[in-house]
Length: 94
Image 1 (spheres, rainbow, N blue to C red):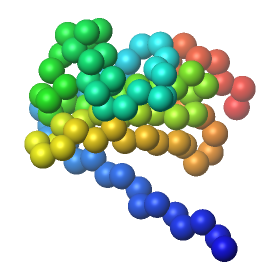
Image 2: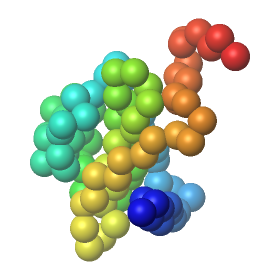
Image 3: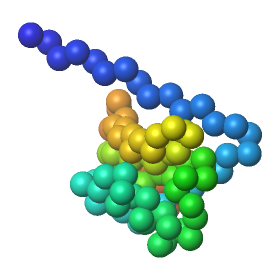
Image 4: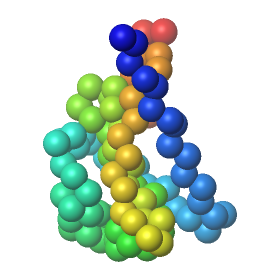
């Protein structure tokens, strides 16, 4: 039986919302509590501010996104369809 595709996540943000991308790599086993603690300790930001915080994995093939929607604090996990995310400073053998 073929696997069902999960619906894509869509994050709608306002024009004043900041998107912060964490430098380095993040342990992808971290849930929203661990990611929220990293936002507070490392970035000195409030994870419940409504801003979007992006955490890349070690290989660059997974991102975790933390965003307070006003009702929930989901940790969204995303994997690109065609390989890996390329970060600034990374070399691309495209």
